[in-house]
Image (cartoon, rainbow, N blue to C red; front, top):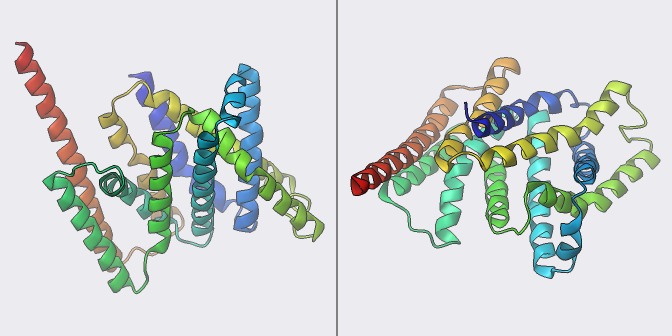
Length: 298
């Protein structure tokens, strides 16, 4: 099997299993988990870059205001995304967090149309319309706007849009993004410790190791993904991306027994139908392009 497929698949499986990791830290406030995730991610990625002796890019990046602004914005979006995800998981909304990442590919299409002025094909419009119907159905039938899902989908969508034109690769970019958030995160943690409510000084060794390990579980999947994405087609990557939300959804329903009643079945069903339309159209279009290219060469 293609190594790229293996690396990308492992990264999505890791992301899909993250709810279990955060759930083991449910006694720690989400803000502290986020701050530890930022601090230890910077430490871990810094060690990776140090081992590689790969620091030549940093001087150039620091002297380019546009690059710095790009990563300030992407870092803030990432921080919001991480916080909402951690809070959602530990507040009992794993199923809704999975919805955010099911919706995300369609949000990417919408942002491409609105911001990059990309033209949408008929099936893409249909997929967006069906997904919107699913969100509206969930809102009115379930009696609550799915703000967690939409916040995750749009923050990650805008994050991807910004990183699409970024000048740095994933490890370098994550280092800068966490560096942007590092001082506020470290200051927050020190304040919590001084107030006597910090988790690191008032928890057992297991909790402390899990908090420090947040940097590893954040960075390793991202590095695997970056390595895998370079070796496979966007079509394959587009199909693999559903591994993570599918695992999250199954974990929420089967392990943590979150509610998944009739109204959610219909709402999720509409969104899954939209994804089938979106992915199916992409696969058929790719196949036609290959067929046309083959005929042109024959």
